[in-house]
Length: 155
Image (cartoon, rainbow, N blue to C red; front, top):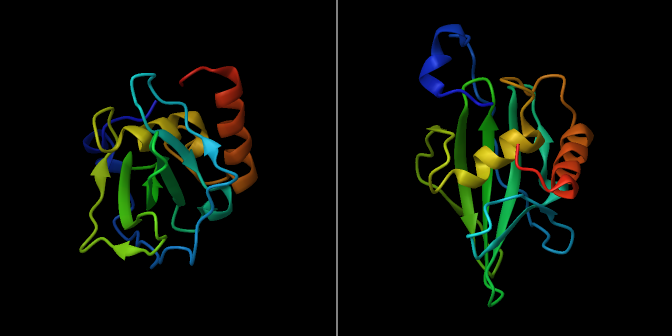
């Protein structure tokens, strides 16, 4: 389970620095890995597997895609900092696929309320290994996410 960020601040490395990042040139919607979400959500959410990275700063970055019933697409390039239990949105894109950087993106606590509900689901379903992403490979994360969906169990 991901604990609230404030409970983990005491053991964070004060010298930690986030690596600079930019969104991938494009994202795909044809091979999305579904994110197990509550049934009342009307949009389908998925992770673009080609966008998933685990970087040396401990941040797991990815593109999450939301597809509405009418086919409208919204995407976000995000990062989950498992150690702090936080998520950051770096950029957003719509149907045209053009990224719009988020001005001054900030880390926000993972929680079950909008708008980070999907990030918490990703963290629980395989992005985070407890409070760590270190030692977790891209392939491990994808395997866990796919297994979570096939189990039909939200972790």
